[in-house]
Image 1 (spheres, rainbow, N blue to C red):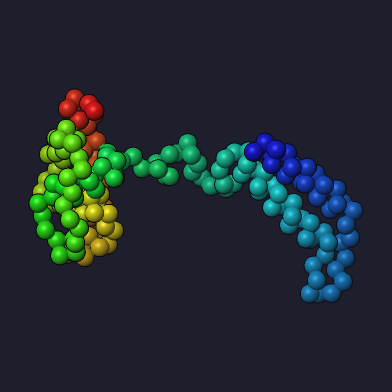
Image 2: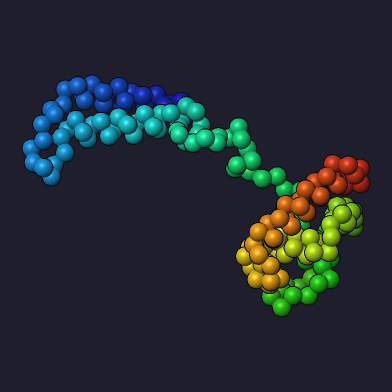
Length: 175
């Protein structure tokens, strides 16, 4: 990465020298001057160098230090949740054509059930559809005849409750 940054800086230095030597006159109205073309190259090089040095897109207000903008914490591993729901779900949906699975250990099932025990029936159903079956919020809203914002609110509330339960429960933290 450092080698690439050095090459970009070298190219920027060279472009700035060529800019000083370039002619400013336009030959036709349709053709841009050499200086205008080189100036655009300099702008692109400076943009790239800043991105490489800072690790974030120049001009953005949110960078990696504001991690929530890029990465949301999940209370559970999504694959574990899908295995759990496919093995333990007692609800039947017309769109679910999958066979029941028995891939989780008893301990994992108990831990998940303990964490999910804090959810209301509606929150659990929405959470199951989103995290267990991987449905989009708009699809869940259509199936349950709710708005997408209601689905989002219920998912956020469920994840907050699950996260709180996991942090407090020794039962969920083990394993």
